[in-house]
Image (cartoon, rainbow, N blue to C red; front, top):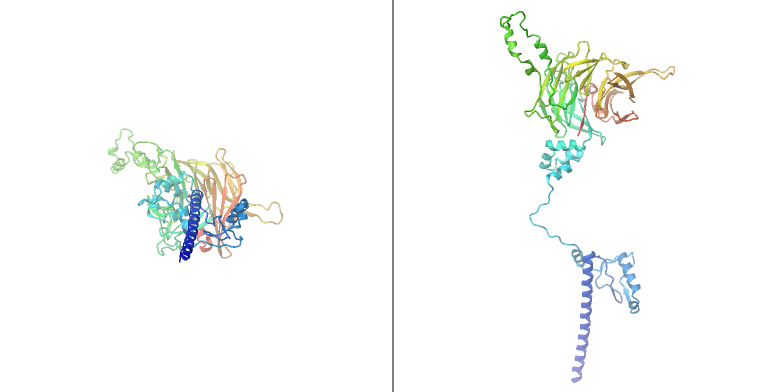
Length: 559
C-alpha cells in the first residue's frame, strides 16, 4: 500500500515537472513572440514564417513560406553552430512549395495588427475648395470640360461663369477649333455644325435647331463666340435649299460652343445674305463711329443767305431742321462709361464690319454697317466707292478694313476717320478670273489667296495648269510678293480661307466621280519652310450634298 502511494507521488512529481517545463517553454516562446511583434510594428511586419527552430523540425507558429524566409533561416542556421550540433532544423521548404501553416484566422490577425488604425472623425466631409476645383477644371480640354459639366450642377455653374472664361483665356489653356456651318444634306439645310479639334485631330458634330433652314449666311468669331450674320430661308419649303422664294434676314445670332447655347443681338439695318465680315478689337473707348446718314442729311439743311430767314422757307422743312438740329449727337455712335475710364482688361470692345452682300431682291449691295459690341447697335457707314465694283472679300488689318472687289480693286476703310481710301498697288497678281481671291489677315500682315496659271516648266506638249498661290502685300511699298503655292489643285470654286493668329486655315469641298470630297489645310506664316500641311481629308463631306460647296462658312475659335 505504501509502495503504491510512493509510486503515485513520484509520477505526480514527474508530471508537475514536465508541466512546469512546458509552462516555462510557453512563457519563453510568448516573450519572444511579443518582442518579435514589437519589432514588426515599428519596421513593418512580415507575414512569412518566423525564423524559429524546433527540435525535429516543424512550425509551431508559421506563415506562408517563401524565398525571404529561406534566406534568413539559412543565414541564422549557419551562424549557430551549437544549434546544429543539437539537431535543430530550420523551418524552411524548397522554393517551389508554398505551405500555409497558419491555423484558420491567425494570418488575418497578423494582417490587422500590421495596419495602423486611423481614427475617423464623425461628421467630417472631405472636399476641395471652389478655387482649387476651378484651377483643375480650367486646365481641361474642351471635350473633357464638357464631360465634367455632367458630373453635378455645381461644376456646371462653376465652368460657365465669366470669371472662369477669363481664367481659361488668360491661362493659355485654349486650343483652336474650326467650325463648319452651312452644310446641306438630302436637299435640306442641315442643323448639324461640324467642329474640328485641331489639337486632337478629331471631328465632332453639334446639333442645333436654331440654324435649321437658314443658308447663305456669314460667320465670324469673337473670343469664344461665333456670330451668324444675315442669310436666307425658303418661304415655300422651309428647311429646303430653294431660292425660288426666299426671305433674306437681317438678324444676328450668337453661338457659344462652351455652353452650347444661342442668343440674339441687335439686327442689321439692311437684310443681306453672304455679307463680307471683319472683326476689329478696339483698345480705346473714345472711338466714335461716324454715320453716313449724318453727312447726307446735313446737306439738306439750308442756312440763311442774304438775310432770308429759315422760317419763311418751305414749311415742311421746319420739322426736318428740328430733328437735325443736333445731328452729331444722334448719328455718331459711341459708348462712354459714366466714369470715363478706359476699357478694363476683362471687358473688351469689338467691332464687326458687314460690307456688301446680296439684298432681298438678289441685288448686290454696296452699303456697309458696323456693329459695336458695347452698345449693341449697328451703324450704317459710308458706302463703298462707286467705281469699286462688287466686293468679294475683306478683313481687318492694323485697324483698317481692307476690301477686294471682283474687278481687282483694293480699298481700305479707316474706322477712326470714317471714309474709304483707294489703294493702288505697284504690281497686281495675275489670276484666273473665274476664281475670286480671298484676303486674310495674320499677325498684322495682309495676305491674299488667288488662282493663277502655272506654265509647264518649258516642257513641250505639257498643258498649263492652275494652282493656288499665297501672296503678301507690303503695306509700306504696296507691292505684292508671292509667298507659297498650295499643294492641291483648285477644284473648289468657293474655297474658304480664314486667318487666326499666325495660322491660315483652308477648307475645300468639291464633287468628283459622284462623291463630295473635303480637304482641310493649314499654313503657318511664321514658318520658314512656307509649306502647307494637310490635317484632314474626306472626313465630313461624303455625307453632304454638293450644294454645301457654295453654302459653307468657316470660323476658328480658341476654346
